[in-house]
Length: 286
Image (cartoon, rainbow, N blue to C red; front, side):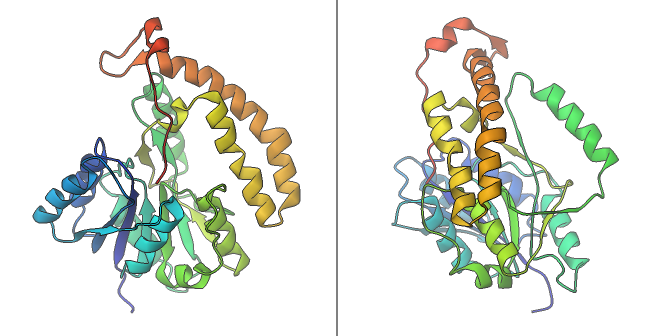
């Protein structure tokens, strides 16, 4: 297969609140997307109905199911089913920019020698009280570094792309454990077969700040997945560095960020101290 085609895989579990907007943004890029596979992982809300409604307007959207609970199972089901030469994997709350698919195709089309096995971009949280400031700074950085493609050891799950043959090569290497960072695991598996992961600064996507609103105990448990993943791949020095040098400041930042987010009302765009006492739910992955 010489011509490039792009499949987009979206694992989903109870994503009725945002999956519609995710699909609408992708549908605007139908000239560059061959198919979208939404993998429902036992949702109990209206996720399936919303996806089915969008599929009636654009048959390239396919709703498939994975009964085995867990993001890794839903991810594998989608990637195994996808037919494109390029397999993008995003989250149900990922909001892609207007030229996202086109830029992905252009990047891989410019690499006929297959020097790059996979690629990813960053995610920028939306609906944050400080979002405009951070967004402006990042936009300035992207403008200065818009063509700066660099090699990275891992991938970012909300915004990643693999060649189909790359997925075939790592399919039996990726772990099915749910207590690790599955995207970090995938990226490391790519490097372990001699592949290279590219970071593309021009395909930044929007992501919901739900993980940022996670309570401190849950966030610490979540972040402990990083050194555990590195240990799984025998990257012991990196695991030690992550535990001792990376995680402590990240947890401190999260504590401050959590205070801001819990008091911020996204509808009125004001800070309300009484919001600290509202009920919140931690981010739940498929």
